[in-house]
Structure formats: structure tokens, C-alpha cells
Length: 249
Image (cartoon, rainbow, N blue to C red; front, top):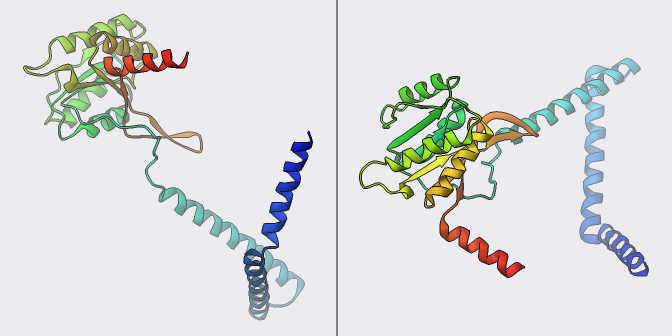
């Protein structure tokens, strides 16, 4: 308890010391005097232009508030429009020749495809009857890619059906392709679809996973997507995580 009180006193002392430090106090006083003189001069100029009656003073005050609000809005807008790309601290996957996509919204599918261009050659689309039109549109919009006919899922709540579809893709890869040439994106469709894709990737061992996160601003989705993030499930990485757990416990 005594140690806590001493720490609080020391923090107060440090704050007071910083405030009354000549390096910070003198510039603060100079800035305050400058702003005061500037404010008085501006007020005199406005009174000379508009008038010096009480109603004129009210108009000046209201106008000042409106100008202040406009300046705050303008600065806030410039800050939000000039934000740098959001860095989630995760690594994006390297560009792959093949991509397996769960199709739901069009925008994240486009983002996932564009990330792997120009190396991307094949793109397999897994969809439901509700998202078949989106899959067809992606086929049309990326004519340079080899996009086979979309694989239709009958039961979007059956993870086993998803895993079978994805494992069949890996079993029928183009000639001289390896599983390392393909990455699967589990962003779209249902949670059961994501689980089925993850199970298939685990069973295929050397396969890679990614997801394409949605962009948010002030806690609300903007409708755009960020760059894909890689989820590596290689045997080497899993073995390393097991070793770390053994060392920890």
C-alpha cells in the first residue's frame, strides 16, 4: 500500500515537473499570448465589418461555431480518405497458380483472385444454387483464367460434402502440379463450408489456406475487402507448434 502511494506521488511530481519545465512552459505561454492577440484582432475586424450591436455579436459567435464545425469535418474527412492501407500484422500468401474459392459475395472473391494475378492460372469455384450467378459472372469477368464449371453444393450445412468436393479438386490437379501450387480461400458461404475446407486441407497435408477479411471503419463494414491472409497448415508448422506446447508444459 505504501509503495502504491509513493508511485502515485512520484507520478504527480513528474507531471508537475514536466508542466513547469521551461522547455514546455515558455512555448505554451508564447502560443497562448499569440492566440489571444490573434483572437482579439479577428474579433475587432469582424465587428468593424458586421457591426458592434448585441445582435451582431450573436451572429459573429454563431458564424464562428459554424466555421469551427466545418473545419473539424473537413480535417476528419481528409484523415479518413488519406489513411494508409490497414496492416493487420499478418502475412499475405505468396501468389499461387491455383485458387479454390467458396463463392458468396462477389467483392471478396474478386479480391482473392486479383491477389494471385498474374501467376494465377486455375480458379475452382464452389457455390450454392443461390450464388451460382455470381460464380458465372466471375467466369465471364476473368476470361484469361481457366475456370471450370462451378461445383454446386447441395447442402451448404454439410461440411463433409464441402471436404469431398475440395479433395476431389486436389486429386485431379493439372499435370505436374503439386498441392503447394494451390491455395484454398474459406471466406465465403457458410461456417460449415469453412470447416469442410479446413478439414480437406488438413487431410491433404501440404495444402494451404487463406481468408479475405472484410474492411471495417469505426466498427462497421465498408463493403470492401482487405488483402488475403495466409493460414499455413503444413506438417512442419504443426510439428513446430506441438514442440512449443511440449516445451511450455
